[in-house]
Length: 37
Image 1 (cartoon, rainbow, N blue to C red):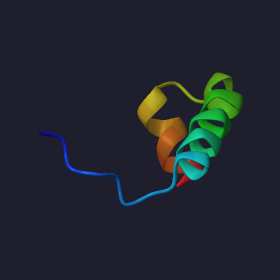
Image 2 (cartoon, rainbow, N blue to C red):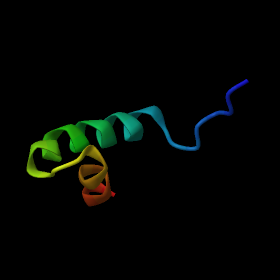
Image 3 (cartoon, rainbow, N blue to C red):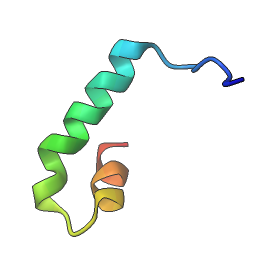
């Protein structure tokens, strides 16, 4: 059974969109995620 997320759905969606927007500027997806975080 998966545990409930501690983050609201809209916040997670926004984070995914932000990473997708900056992804072309970075060599890896991980680098893009760190930049957004």
